[in-house]
Image (cartoon, rainbow, N blue to C red; front, side, top):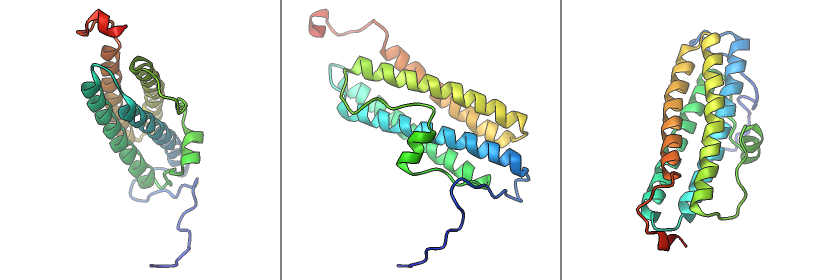
Length: 182
């Protein structure tokens, strides 16, 4: 195993890509925005996994599978965001403390809640992330980085889809008998 300890690029720096031809200031703004989205996505991922592990009730299997799917999508989105940060010449944030500090959303605490509360917390977090991603799409577009804007648009579609599915879970219509809910 190599004992090499040479830092190739310091965290928080941007070394613009000659291939992508974005100037330094634009690249720095985009890297900052994408790192914010990356952090939010990882906070979301961990909250979804927590709920995936702890879900109970009559709809256990369906909600468990949904939350697993949502967490997988968040993990894939985080990977895409990190790779775009790197392509723009930045360093994707990765430390747990740094991710939590950079995220515009806060995870719920470690307690286990009923499924309705858990899903409500997830929908709230999705909504906050959706608003931030929309702002970053506008930023990328205004800076002329149409590739980042397109990637974020695709990410936004997925975020909205999962948020909307949670909204359906939280409706008051159910097949569960009333006496089973008391």
